[in-house]
Length: 386
Image (tube, rainbow, N blue to C red; front, side):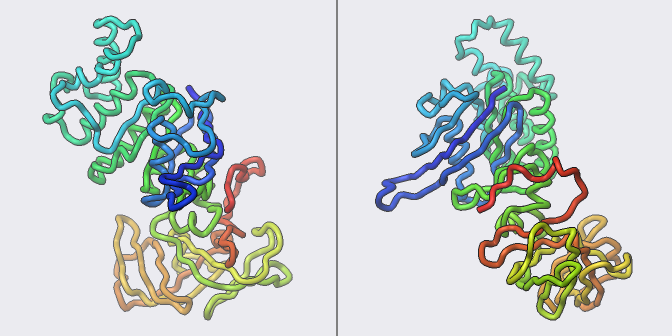
């Protein structure tokens, strides 16, 4: 296992004194032995460039990348002992699965005999449940089978690091869910430190031990999935992580004696003082996650309650995404017991104060996150505020 450190890394393409493009800007990330890091962000945010610098395919313009406290900036990719899994599988089409899996071992000076290599190939193929495909060529495999072979080719070398560059992007939705579970289980089993690039926040929340959210080359937040979801460091993270998107409204907040009163357009509600750290006052952005709404007639209202005129109902299994017009503006809510609900109907929605997010209107940094019960020792310690 390897302790990975990205220490103040910046990558500029072109002349930094003229029109150079800053792809990664002063990035600091620490990944403990055996941890699964996910680099998450929109296209062009610098996540793949970061992965390529870890793997030695790009050289940092500034800063250092360390494996176990050893700087590897000047070490060539082939000497870093990392294994990469790409979006396009990159299998040798003229070789069988057996030959693809064993190719890396044959090229390395590891003292392994042919029998040793065959035994290792069999072990990895069994682990990935592709032992019956060893004599097939890539053209005879499905997308999921090709991805397993690509994973096996990385695992068989027992590298210091696994690097995944959107490995599931070419698979259908059902197979993506299956494969991401398998990748998560596999990484836990072999215990190799891993970095995984994706723009899919559902993938990130499912498999990561730690998520680094990037935007325009800068680190927005580094934390566990539940921290990133419940306590997004800023408005960008809050809107990028979570599906459907968070509802955001402009408002003001002021002290009300027993807590704070939040004023929105044609709506207001109280937040108890116990749910807020520090003093609140002034203009804010108010955020509501669609999953946190409930129909008022299903529960006793204890927070903001408002009427909603239904525009669209999108059934999603046992729940539905409901888009409505409200006195505050357009609201998206995810609700249960939606049968019989259709466009033109009205309903009453509520949200509890502990589930309300508040962001500073000027800096867009988090003032209040989604309250969850936990011990003080579990409070966010590695969030990055920008």
